[in-house]
Image (cartoon, rainbow, N blue to C red; front, side, top):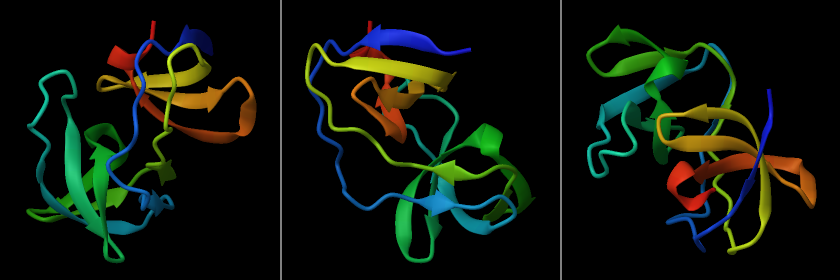
Length: 116
């Protein structure tokens, strides 16, 4: 079920290169993300030379440093401005996945602590 939020903090992603992985593809898992306690269960991974974070719930562990995606995943993060409207279709590990009200064709992630 979708939920409407208002963006309460401006944010610019740290990168413009995001993981986009299909169900069944294999990634190299580096370690668990630990820089922010509000964002638990994110794994630092590399796929086809691109570094990024994947929710633990999307991964099936194969061995100590490899995992298979159990569903399609796109790590795109929105640049946000205070006051924008965001429609979330999923919240997971301190983040919301959905679209900006004026950009329904583009889906991505925003930290929940930037939404109200």
